[in-house]
Amino acid sequence: MEGLVRMTFPQIDVAVRVVDWQSAHGRNHLPWQQTRDPYKVWLSEIMLQQTQVSTVLDYYGRFLERFPDVSSLAAASQEDVLALWSGLGYYSRARNLHQCAQQVLRNHGGVFPDRADLLVTLPGIGRSTAGAIAAFCFSERTPILDANVRRVLTRLLGFASDLALVKNERTLWAHAASLLPVTDLVDSMPRYTQGLMDLGASLCVPRKPLCSQCPLQSLCVAYREGDPEKYPVKTRKLVRRSESWWLLILKDRAGRVLLQLRPSKGIWAGLYCVPVFPDATSLMALLSGSSFSNISIENRAPFLHVLTHRDLYLHPVVAECDAEMVPQDLGDWFAPEQWGGLGLPAPIRKFLDSL
Image 1 (spheres, rainbow, N blue to C red):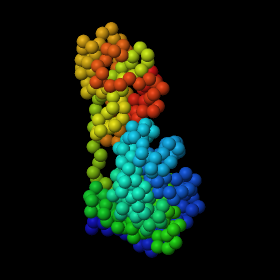
Image 2: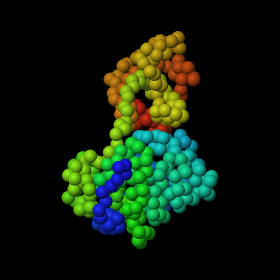
Image 3: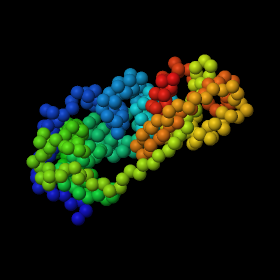
Image 4: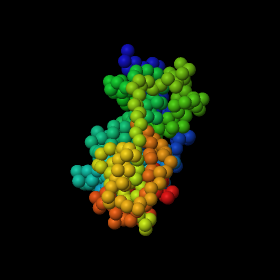
């Protein structure tokens, strides 16, 4: 039967145990936990999507120093936002972040909505992120279901339905809502929400979960079954594919590098990048044209850059020439001291820094 769970415990026990555990053993020191400012919490939630806490900490501080509030972020250019985000990856988050700030300013008077059902209408804020912001900042009794929490709850409940199906995901949301705290919501909702995240990050991990330390062990169906790693169930797998890109690193005699602004959609959208070619033939066709003469060319070792759904095999070709040889529509020249202010993909920045 779809959505069937083997829940044999008082539901309130879950919230009480998670809240108590989080207070004593959870993460309570992170900078975004010391505030109920929805701007700061929202920023942390977006940065933490598919990114480790240790990586986010540095970016979070720098971002707030540059954009201390939603108004300053909304007033910035997308180029400035992407430059500060450079290296954090998943750049659509930064573009949505900028659009969301502008929409909060334009449609909500610069004040974030205080309900999850309104937050979810903003760019880049999904249901789980909206729930987290609402719970942390406004103590709204609303669930979240990010990857960590999904794992904790499916194991706890013995929820064996395939989450690749929307109807089963919807059922799990309903179960998540049924387990929420019912008393002292001002304190319990933020702690419960953080506690589920912390359990998934520290104990209820994908492989070899630390069940002996978990406050929910005696309630957990997956623990009783002896096979927690079979949860969650999701049959639809991410289809990966590979691409090869040839990168033209074109330097002039002054050490500047030619960079182009990437298209508004696709990989590294809106970032600055060296010219990209689908194969070596098309790259060499450009360099062998009449515009170029007496140009030195060096093929560097290719390297792999892994994205969520794609493996990019990058083939750098370094060429040096006089700037006046290069057609003006091919890009703009940037000196090394300017690179730090540009939104550059992490592998491109790393390669340029190695020149």
